Length: 104
Image 1 (tube, helix red, strand yellow):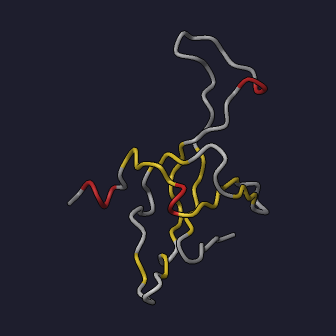
Image 2 (image 1 turned 60 degrees about the vertical axis):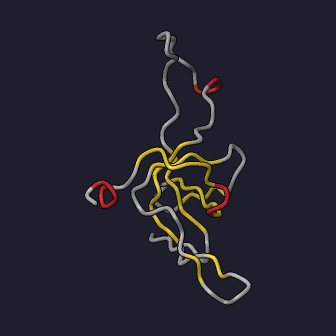
Image 3 (image 1 turned 180 degrees about the vertical axis):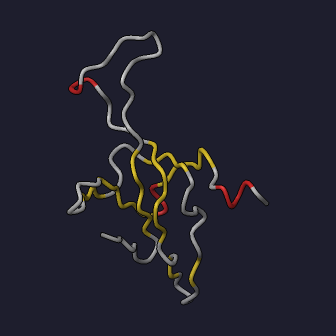
């Protein structure tokens, strides 16, 4: 299934929760925190401003981003893939740039 976000929405594939702490303690599933980091897999066309102009999103497909803990809507595809759909304003930071940004 291919998802195409509308407007200023971004589709993120959350990264896996950490299996163990920095000290080496293995965490059971019930103790794992929900990840707040993920990879951008699709980007909408941008936000329509009051002037009618479209402002393109700052993030690109392939970027690794941090997002708010309770941000967005979780969706699961027919294939069992889990994604998060957020508005661009819910993205707090870009942690790692996509390959196309690194080549510039």
